[in-house]
Length: 611
Image 1 (tube, helix red, strand yellow):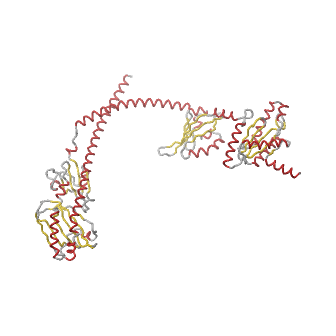
Image 2 (spheres, rainbow, N blue to C red; image 1 turned 90 degrees about the horizontal axis):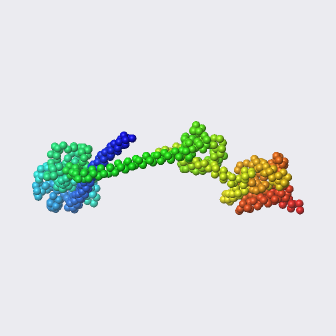
Image 3 (cartoon, rainbow, N blue to C red; image 1 turned 45 degrees about the vertical axis):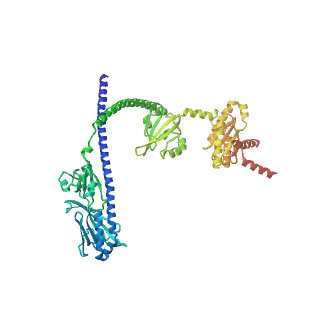
């Protein structure tokens, strides 16, 4: 026992160590995720600033070039090429280049792409402007786009690395704008912009490595050295950096495409990564606090898990005890979709008297009364087929033939894909209760319905007739000269005559007609599906059968019968009153006959003819 407790302690200790290690790992992973989040936020903020700054720069370019693009002087020069317009064009170009120093070169082209005016910045603050003939060779590389141009179009070429007199190395972006006059294409305005100052301002991020790449992943510009932001890309290539866009992404750089801002046929991409000193700086105090919190947290978890384990074990014991109680006292069976029994517990076997071998693979219908099954099966299957639970009362029987009345709950069972696999049925034995209910509604001498049950049935059928409009009828029967039988043979013979009469009447009636003892020697037959004429013929049949029967102790006995229909009746009293009047009319006419509305009406007509 001591050894067992020691092993348990070791298990708890090892479990606690594993949880503590897991907690520290979790905290480190969380810190790494926080760093990744910081990096991602920095990159998003940088790219958002780039997007806004680039949009403003493009708007500035368009705004600066539009006055010249839409100038009437320029339009007249492109149409007529008159020397008088050259003076004004020269002044406008000098003013434009002074207000927008990034312009390195400017060309005005005709609609064929030939340069008519050429401007180039030679040295600081000095310009050279040449007016050329229309036979000059086309210089616009996208002349095919010029003829499909629209008034508000703007073109961008690839960013090019060029050498010049002012700077040894510079990045140049060529921009083109079409020139229209009243929707007529006249030519184009082509400008080369020095992008060095724009990129220096854009790339000023001392705590990050930023590169501008072409579509092949080659470096066009970088801020690798924070002290000299205009780094020569050729020098950068000498370092161990990726050479393709995919390799940049794999190296931990975040990428941002500029294609939607600068619609150049050479796609431009920015790559961004925070530098190591900023990214991986870790607060030692935070790690110490995290470790302490991990130990405390998982110590609590270990204790909680131990309590949880004990509670689970206790619940399992309780559940097992509950299952044992259910198995012993609550009858349960499991069936497949066709109603074949797959499993049953001990309580069900004890209730029915069968063994498992008797039941497994058999249909549950073998236990049920065929008449009751036919009556409830439609309601049952109409509920079960859509996958709903059904509850009702089933009349079954034990292996020895004793009747069972079972309150039954049938619950559909489904698999993980919600396909119906079978049913579970839970039973409650209501046999004793049913027998008590039956005794309360049965006549103790004859075993048929008593007056209270007959009255209840007639009320139900009358209500159904009132709602549906369907007619039903009753027969009121009285044994002729029954008092004489009691006086001559005694009450015991009289009781036996009542019993024999009951058996004879029951044998002569078909379903769903029902019979009961109304009181003394009077009986009532309810015909729920028969109209007046049909019921009248049934009454005549009963009258003849009884008259022809030889009773064991008394010989011949006859009956008188009165017939009544539900039509026009508002209460059971009215229904019985009409049948009672017919019965007494039959007595007055000499007994052993049937009287109802039809026979009364025929008698009155015959009496009137005799008069």
